[in-house]
Length: 390
Picture: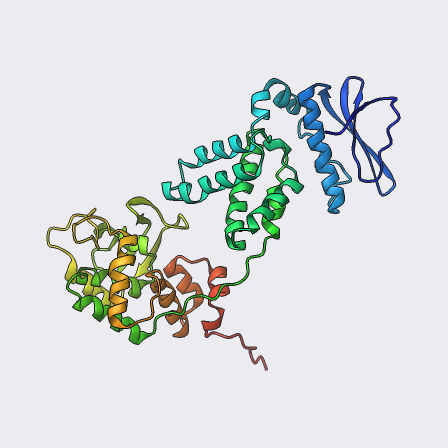
């Protein structure tokens, strides 16, 4: 903790160093940048708690000077509302003193309402574990500086990939943004770091060839233990839907004429939820798929019945299917193993190679058009040409 000086005390602010001082029983900051003198009154009384807040503000300014992002207008450093700022830290000290652990735990509890239990366990709770192992148990969230955040990233880099770190930083950035709306913190040190992390490109798994598709389907048809899944596998290859979307498909989602299919919900590990993008879409049905769906629909099928139930009549467990049926049938067929999700990649690749408009393919598969172009640029056949105007 830097020393708190009083007005009249000999204390020069050297370049890039912020001095915290008591000015008429109120805390003030002083510093110099490029020969220019600055001062900022915080409107806070000189107490032990408020000195910590002043220290945090001073660290933020010093960090911005160091990394050449100093806001000479001081708008970034001024409380958005001086009265509100004082009330948050003087009348709500418990909130202001939330530790890093307490803040992210509170954020996790808030997200439980909209995020699956699996995601909470595999991502949010893992972030809490790493935060606890790096930060002191009493580290106040408001006092986490950019230097602290950078140190945490360096700590993560010792044991995980850039793509995983990017995911964790996304959650931390969202947490601190959320905490600002709750007036718990005023500065988000994770936002800039999230943008800095560059994830190296990853070569996509190669799609199945047309011959491989036929061999895989035949392998399911002839396997006495897993032939029940043949129609499910055919549907994945024929539509490019996500596995959870196929598992969650109900007869009420298919039009009476079997001409279109509504995709708007999924089932993953028994959890019912919306699609990945939280958007519904309608996909067309060709003659071959239409005949298959007509042939498997039970005469007494109810609207809410699943189109592709498990042998026991429940929702298919995607993990068990992948590890048992899919893996064994591919081995039986002599096909190089690729995850069931590769059926989606295969569908998109073959559509684009056939010359389909990428925008149409994106609409059918529920992909973002820009993402589709980025991931499948090598198989988009429609190359731009200059028109002959005269």
